[in-house]
Image (cartoon, rainbow, N blue to C red; front, side, top):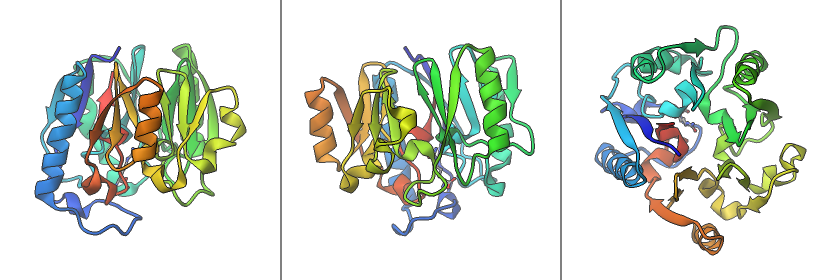
Length: 256
Ligand code: CIR
């Protein structure tokens, strides 16, 4: 069960954030409305929210997931892989420390973005990407081990379609994986029940289960029908303005 989430409001300079995709310039008003709907969905799923003010130093700061890995057993601040985002981990620290007085940290030359980290029960998949390097993955794996979790890496550097591992994978209820076609046959996931998302609906793979609700980006009808048929209760959310900055549902919160 998750009980808490930390979010950060998008700032007026949100459109200055990083992106590799060409989906247009986000509207600030719509970004705020979509963020508010996301927060409502988390509240309705039973979470108490800490909503931090926008941080004008970091246009990507609303993507808080990248700044820390949070488990029931403890939390570790990351060291984000994009230089413009390095300060975001320090900025989230006070909010996280209110819940976790002892915080570990990924140290240089390691880099880790939380978007590359996918928990599947007591195992954690760590994406090696343009943002998360081998040093960071090793540090994180050691920290996870001390908390009773196994870890393995998945190299996604050849996959141009995704920024982070979790842009292409979600783990539902600790077991069942949603996977984009490019990751479906990866040996790392062989032991898991897999739902392969249609290539045309790949963005939907970044779904998030929050207690008895699965948050899904709106506009992925085949995946939505598939998940409903599997018995999940869905909450579909408009994500267009976050997709424009390469962000998905999971990036907008730290859940614990
Ligand atoms: C970035 O490129 O870093 C942001 N514009 C998007 C980060 C998305 N985060 C995530 O998938 N966890």
